[in-house]
Amino acid sequence: MAKRLMIWFFIFCLVTGSYGQITPAAIEHIINSPSQFSRIPLSYPEETREFYKCQLYSPVWTDDRALITDLFQLLEQSPDLGLQEKDYQHDFIRGYRAGNFYLASLYDSVEAELKFTDAAIHFLHDILYGNRIPSIGYNGLNYSPACFDISSVLQLAIGKRQLAYLHLIIEPRTPEYAAIKEKIALYNRMLSDTSFREVKITSSKVSSANKPLLNKLYRLGFLDRADQPVPDSLLKIKVKEAQRLFNLLPDGVLRSTFLEALNEPLTARLEELCYALNTLRWLSCIKETGKIIVVNIPSATLLVYDEDKAVLESRIIVGKRSTPTPLLCSRVNEVILYPYWMVPHSIATKELLPSIKRNVGYLDANSYQVINRQGRVVDPYSIDWSTLSRSYFPYIIRQSTGCDNALGLIKLNFYNPYSVYLHDTPTKPLFAMNKRYFSHGCMRVEKAIELGRYILKDNAVAIDTLTEKGCLYNQSPVTVPAIEKLPVFVLYNTAWIDSAGRVSFSEDVYRKNRELFQRN
Image 1 (tube, rainbow, N blue to C red):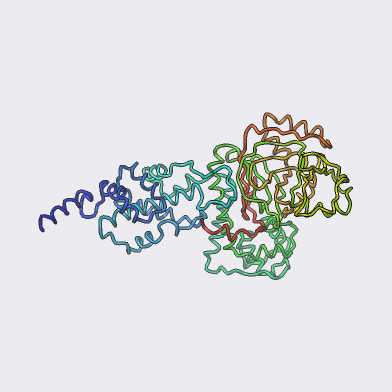
Image 2: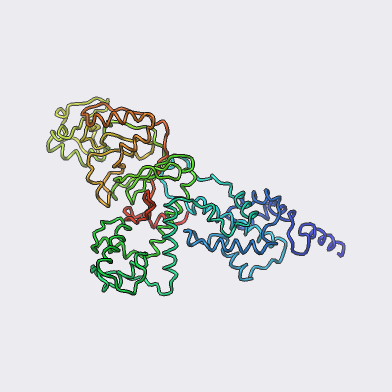
C-alpha cells in the first residue's frame, strides 16, 4: 500500500512540479485526453487547444495573478462594447473572484487555466467578428469572417502585457463604428444612473413645461441636464436634432410618429445599437478584401465601401411590409442598360389584369407587351382577357424600355432565389420621403447611374453613352458583365449609420427586431 502511494505521489509531482503548480505535461495530458477535455465546458475548444499547442502547453494564468486581473479588466468593458460579460465563462469567473472556486485537484487547476483562456478567446472573437451572425436568408457568398488568428493575437497580447486594453488595439477604426460605440457608452451611463426612470411623453408641447420631453432629450444626449428650463428656441433646435436621430422630418413638431419613437425604452435603443455594432464587426473581414455594397432595409440606404472608406452613398426604396425585401448576400455579376421589366406573375395578375380587362389600351399606354409561352410578342387585342385569372395566365407581360420603364435606365443583377435586384426608377420624388418602403421587394436606387459606373469601372463608357442618349424607347437591352463582381449585402438594422458616421434609428418596418435579437 505504501509503495502504491509513493508511485501516485511521483506521478503527481511529474505533472504538477509541486503540490499545486501546473506543468506543461499536465495540460498536454488533459487536452489530449478526449474524455477529460470534453468534460470542461468551453465555447471555443479547438481554438483553446491550438493556443496551448503553440504555447508548448505552458500554463499562462495560474501563476500570474496580474494577468488574470488584466483579463477581468478586459471583460468588464463588455457592456460599452455592445457585448455581454455573461458570455465569457461568467459563472466560473464570478466564483473565482468571490473565492468560491476551489482547486481541489490537478484537474481543477487545469480546468481553471483552460477556462481563463477560453474566456479571452471568446471575447476576442466577439470583438473581431461580432457576437452574433446577422440574419440572412440567402448567403450566396458562403461568407463567414475568419481573417484573424485569434490564438496568435491572444499570445501576442499576453507577451506584450497588452491584454487589459487589447480591444482598443484590435477593434475596427472607422467613424461609424466609433459613433455607435459612443452612443452605447452614453446609453449605458444613463441606464446605470440610480435616478433613471423611463418616462412617457404624452404632451405635444415643445416647452420646458413638458418635463418628460426634457428628461427624454437628456437621456438621449441632446441636453446636458433634465432639471433646468431650456429656452423654447433652443428646445426646438434640440427637438429637430432628435428627429434626425429617428430618421424623421426635422420640423420641431411633436407628431405621433415622433412621440412613438421618443417613447421607445432606452434599453430597446441600446439593443438596436449593440446589434448594429456587431454587424459592423461581422462585415469587417470582407471589407478588408476590397469593395462591397451594403444595403440596410430600415434606413432604406445603400453604402459602397472601398475597404473601410465609404465611397458612395444613396437613398433607396425597399419593399413594403406586405412585400418585404429579402435579406441576402451575393455578388453583382452584370449591369443591364435599358432593361426590360418582366412583370412578376403576382403583379401582372393581381394589379395589372383588372386594369387590362377594363381597357386593353392600358397596355399600350404604359408601354407593356404581351409575351406568349413561345417567347413571342402577341397582339393584346387578339386575347380574350375575360378568360384569364390569377390561376390561369399563360402569358408574360413585359414593359418596354424608356423613361417610363419601372426599372428606369439601369439594372444591377446578382444571383439570388428571390428574383430581386438593384435598379433605377422613373419615380424620383419618392426618394425625398423619410420612410421609403414602397416596392414589391426589389431595391430602387437614387444614384443607380453612379453605382453602375462605379461597378463597371473600365467599361463605364457604356454608362456615359447611356446618360448622353437618355431615354430611348424600344431600345434593346444592353448587358455589360461586371469586371469586378462586388459583394452585396442586404441587411436589417434599425440602428444604422450614414457615410459621415452619423447614427440614426429607423422604424422596425418588418417587425423583425424581436426575432433578430435572439442570440444565435
